[in-house]
Length: 153
Image (tube, rainbow, N blue to C red; front, side, top):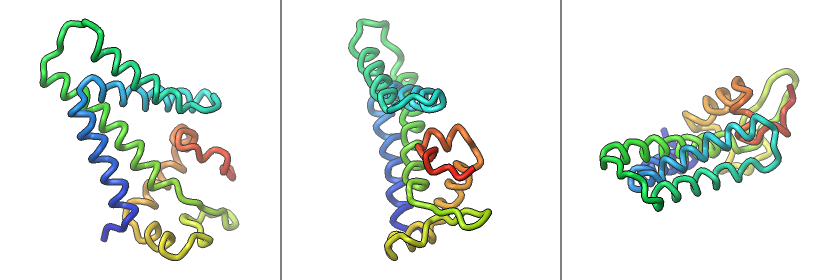
């Protein structure tokens, strides 16, 4: 059964996809911004969030500069891919953004120190633990989701 955490994450995924399709090249710029953010986070730069803004700016420039027009279908496809990247990033951020704790050699996600409604929403989510496990096993994703400071490895 879906919890409130899943509904928020799936809504952000759907919203990113819809905004990307509707925005066209602006949506492609959002996806490019997510890729820039992931790259800058791997390089260890402080505040790689400006990569998202740079991608959005590039998308705006692509829309406003007098470039040859793309077909409507191609622009929608590029925007949808960018929106999908943004939506996936936001959904993963929501699913993995709750506190966790190291108990011996294992990890407990979510932490039992969370308030009861939040703990129940995250622990009963069919996606949150799998998303956290994916982030834990993928070092570049762990860094990109800003979980690096909590790293017990």
